[in-house]
Image 1 (cartoon, rainbow, N blue to C red):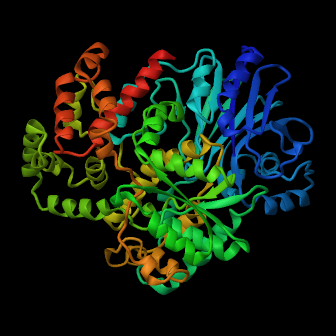
Image 2: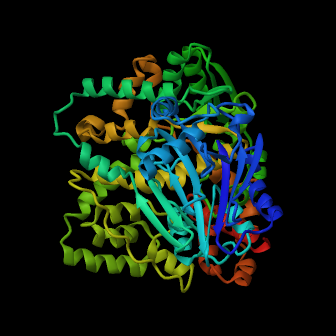
Image 3: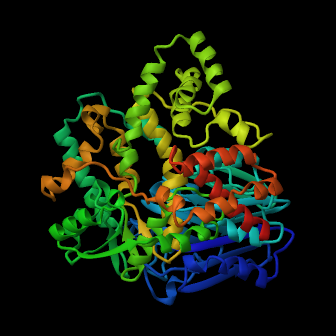
Length: 622
């Protein structure tokens, strides 16, 4: 796992000191080695910070090239099937100088061109500069586990693992993208291809880009899509029994976990006590052949504390278990650094426990397996059921009546019944209905909160070929947006902040494609969330440790913001401060803050505003 950046510019490059500064802003992603390559014409540079995982010798230094020095690569991530690919490439005449997967990628590109990405099993973001053709090829993994940002400016193309490196380069992005701001306030995060900056973009999951220096042409290509995987692999109902599906899923997960145990440094697993992380830890313990190290976070507030349950699971699996109990003081220390870690507003409060469990794990290991992805694949979110029920009710309202009631709801706003009325016109558009009910600030509220901020045009409906249920639509929406843009972004930044590599076996694309091939009745039988995954886990744990209600990976933020963090909230959202900045309507903000402090509502709306204000202050100071 590493930090990468680079620039291709036919007008020449910035001074090496400037390039090194942009590179070293990523030192947390790669504390073990540094690299800088500049092309013979000085029209391209590749920047690298290394976290040594595979082949710890100097042979793993990057940037590295193929035999003749025509192709140069910087790579972040892991290609887990690299040994098999290497054997195939050696059979085709390629010669290797290291035992790294990064060298396999550059030879795979040399052999198969852009189609090489279809052969990789893993998480990755990489860029390859072709000295002869003066082209830059950059790709991001299928599910979006690893980040890749870019900027086009004049005759140059820049890329980086994090936005801070782009901002540090001459002519880096600066102006705020107001459409991205709208989406942030609605969702709590910014979705690709947009970033919070007008002039910077994110390569979406499952895409690669090609930049040609001579023509300054940028071409973006999608090479994998969960929607296509869903349509391509869909089997008739009854094609697999639940028992057969459970057996096949176990085999697929065992293979995914086993591939991710390849490491030349110590490896462990996050264990929250939930189904997802427990499956990963159980499979890891059964495969590893040695005592597995597991890590969990606890809280003093019992409603948020899964540590006792995680402890029981660890005891049953015989792991070397470690716990850290989060405190208000740690929250006070972490929250002001959100902008530093994430580079743009990011309001998922579970970033705190994710950072703390990463910090704990890094004291013992360099790699940790994580259970992310289970909720999206196996219907684990409670709101899938509740939004589905609302959608069925809304469909019973005639279209004209729904439109009229929707206008009434938007006009009044604020109360739960009015929000329900406002959603009625969306009853024929399940994706937009789902988007509406999973938003934090809804459109008619944002019109009041940010005067003059126009609602972006509605995104076109996705290409859900033959989707046979609302659940399939909700799943596909989360796989394409919430999972990569929130969950995986959170895990990447939090783990990389402490130089820890997090691997996610549930998101092996072969596992994802298998799960998407299943009928809803098999994937989520009788609407029971994660029943299929529980059936796998029950082969490793007793029922008493498997059958328990879902408990999200959250923090007691309501109590903290009404208690020790209250001053932070009221300071950043003070009316005088908001008037000086001129973005949010102070009266609207004051109303919501007062309602939150009075205990009438949860923290979601005010937290999104607080995080934005903290980010904006650092942004203005930069």
